[in-house]
Length: 131
Image 1 (cartoon, helix red, strand yellow):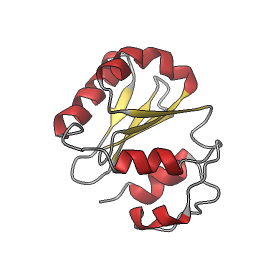
Image 2 (cartoon, rainbow, N blue to C red):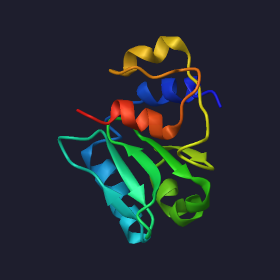
Image 3 (cartoon, rainbow, N blue to C red):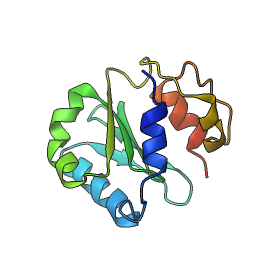
């Protein structure tokens, strides 16, 4: 799946709508639905969303309104998505195996190397997570 248009759209949004509060309101919604959230403020750029077995099933980007989530958990969170129209959702079968690509002109968004021709949601999380 090519993420070029999605990433371009997300980074060009008026981020005044995706403010500090929106990110944490979305995290609270995940918790209300029974999912666990790990986010170290001032240290991480993404919140990791886990199921009851502590298996990561999603990543929510703090910097931009972007969520990768495994498709089997999407139905749990439909209310959250309807309330936050700025949140862009990418539903995946697996965070570890679904392969994405982006155009090279987006490489400047990432501080670390990522193979823009073939990467997973986990790869993107890994190279962009540290502040």
